Length: 182
Image (cartoon, rainbow, N blue to C red; front, side, top):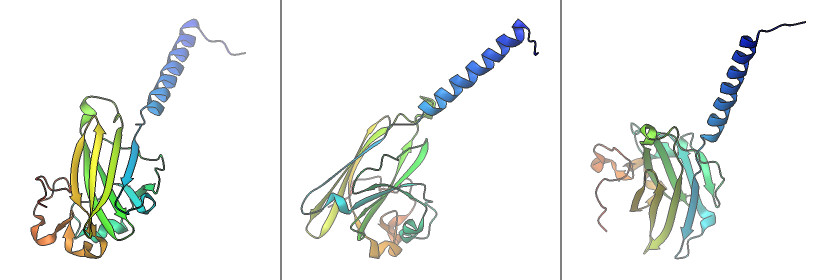
């Protein structure tokens, strides 16, 4: 028969309580992200693919994006598997395996909360002449909003951060920091 003092039992209860609390906090720290995609001008949502992960800005050109280990989070519909992290969150938007746009969403709120709170990622793709544009509107702790032209995948070897290599310079966010001229 095992005998334990009242003090030992209280220590065990404290340890179990702390363990249960830690597990509850860890499992509840996942963020609730949502991806919404809208298309118009004869574009189809079924042809939109969005990949997520981390890509190096030290790559030779954008063609390396298509060989990376990015996870598909949207393929005609949201897969409910986007879990962002503090810091660099890279997205690659692909339309019909012909057009792409990549960008980085920085989440700096690790000084404000124990995990990213989750964001609503809104993507709208539409045609203008023979070009596809993408509106990105991120709602949440770290909002971001911009509109950019998508590049043809066949030109990815000549681009870095969606920009012609000779004009790329230093890229901080994989999207130009000033408004694109149309």
